[in-house]
Length: 102
Image 1 (tube, helix red, strand yellow):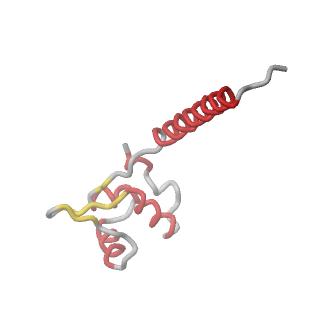
Image 2 (cartoon, one colour; image 1 turned 90 degrees about the horizontal axis):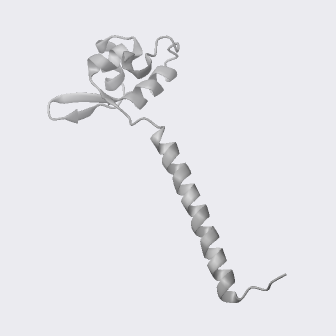
């Protein structure tokens, strides 16, 4: 068996670390690509998404169950918040329209 010098060992170690790090970065990039960004929905879209009325969305917002995000005069709700509230309220999966009916 051939003996490695300290420099050869360090070069080999650096190559393996770089390869391992590159593989982890590729795995993380693939994982984040598969995640959809959180969409912002209008009150009407939010109600349709959950199969409830806009009045229900408003009541949930007023009661602190939903957080409204304001952009000027527009009110929007995060899709992830809507799904969380839908599960919390015990809505059946058939009521939760995946992708907002798209």
